[in-house]
Amino acid sequence: MNRCPFWKLGLASLSAGVLVGCAQPVPPLYQWGSYEGQVYAMYIEPGKAAPEDQLIRLEADLQRARSAQKALPPGFHAHMGYLYFQLGKLDQAVGSLRTEAVLFPESKAYMDRLIARITP
Image 1 (cartoon, helix red, strand yellow):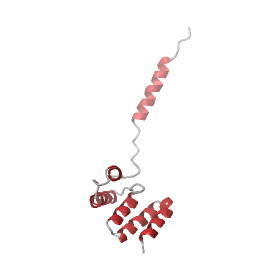
Image 2 (image 1 turned 90 degrees about the horizontal axis):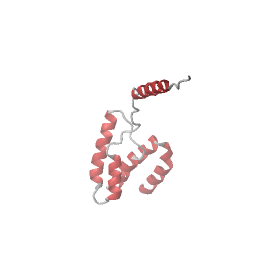
Image 3 (image 1 turned 135 degrees about the horizontal axis):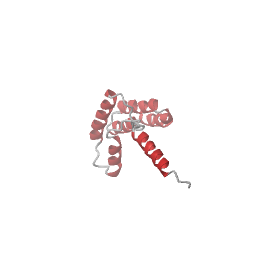
Image 4 (image 1 turned 90 degrees about the vertical axis):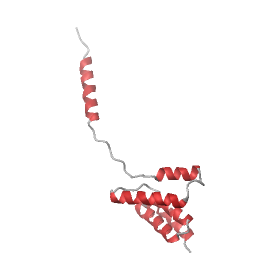
């Protein structure tokens, strides 16, 4: 009589489950902070997200990321540049856009166009 080796299948499944359960979680690539929520709020409820308030939160996120030596996500510095532009702080806006272009070279052409539009 040929018995089906179901117990071997069960043992293999249990072993695989134990090995997967012991794996280390992959840390996130970027430290998002309040960035996503702020961009969402800005576009969903435009009058509620004042540029000054957003900048205060984003600058705090920037300092936390720097102190933890974590990378900020794509668009973070560009968004800060946009907020600085809204407040009339052109030097800081240009600086943030340049930082975005350096950190994410694929955005350089777009950042250069934005900088050309806001600088005299």
